[in-house]
Image (cartoon, rainbow, N blue to C red; front, side):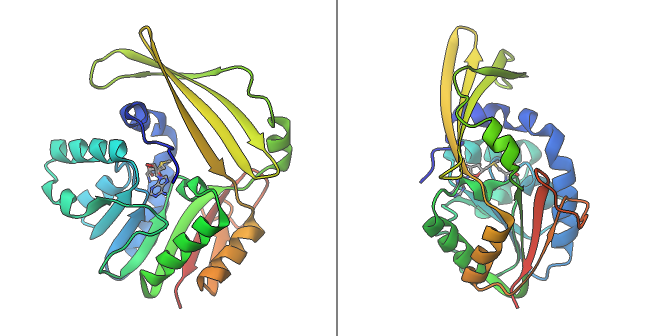
Length: 256
Ligand SMILES: C[S@@+](CC[C@H](N)C(=O)[O-])C[C@H]1O[C@@H](n2cnc3c(N)ncnc32)[C@H](O)[C@@H]1O
């Protein structure tokens, strides 16, 4: 089990940190999920940045996440919006062995969250579980980055110094939070080892994160192992067919 995002600090600044990326992701997932028949499920829904918007728009949506801190933030945002029903729809579970009595018309994993699984065993268990929870004809959607070997190699083993990322505001205290990070790439294990440093006043808090990148061909094998026979992969959320190094891989698979 991964400790990524199991920290109050991440929950505090997550929305500010992700302002730039989530609109176009939301537009893509909304358009795909509109075509699905039946309830839909967000795997690793975090603090509900996408889920809460879709719920407000009337989607019959469920979600889960492993981090209680992120879920607490989701529930307080939902309370502020008057969305009490969210508690019956969102739970704390692990994407490797989550379970529902329902079958879904669409299951999606935005924001590269699948990369939080660090072993093939976890990846395969997660994908088989997703397959088992889909209705016939149901869609499985996700995105993660297409690894650029050149970039990964250049930044391998370079974690000596923290780099300043950005300044955020603590929504609870109004104080400034400065975010720093240092990162190392293990090109043999396909892992990024990131250490995030949150600095607020005279306090610092370090939060480690480990991610495992996945190649396009590798993911197609994983989909096959999980039982999928039909899928498309795009090079961006605008559904461009061109997949280049470093572009976003955006997947639409179907349970046939
Ligand atoms: C980048 S955030 C994405 C959150 C949300 N989906 C969004 O679009 O903003 C990644 C999320 O994956 C969750 N996560 C990591 N490993 C997990 C696991 N094994 N099972 C469930 N959630 C997991 C983290 O707690 C975190 O909330």
